[in-house]
Length: 157
Image (cartoon, rainbow, N blue to C red; front, top):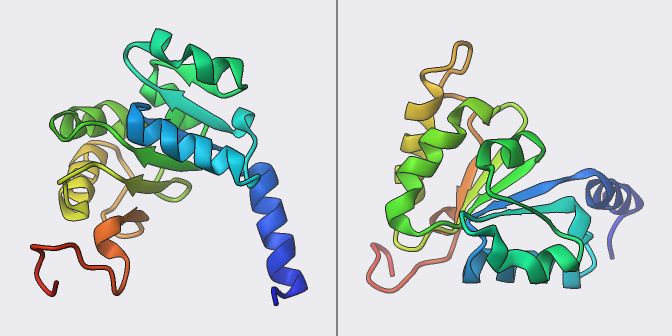
């Protein structure tokens, strides 16, 4: 049974946390749809980005925010989910670096075949060009960081 305090925090999060999903292709839109269908977040709390925004008209009609402006999406979010193709990840991280605030943002990667360490390194490199942002304090998460979860072909699998 969930404690009253935990329920209050969860309710507050659900009502205030904004999410940006950068790279709203199949994976990104699946995450967005799942979050909205679960009832934890309304579509209006989720911003989807894609270079070709006309492919997201269905999601715009459902109430999701849709843009091609990744830095603006990051600035308006608390949680940033990177869901681009692996070959676009480094470019994207460089693009959003000026908007990332590691004291505020939670950065999550679902980039296929790209380890969190690569993502975190790119984010650190990008942030290194911004005064006042040391490497410590970065809040990054990815599938490879979940305890007990091992993918086939990975060490410990």
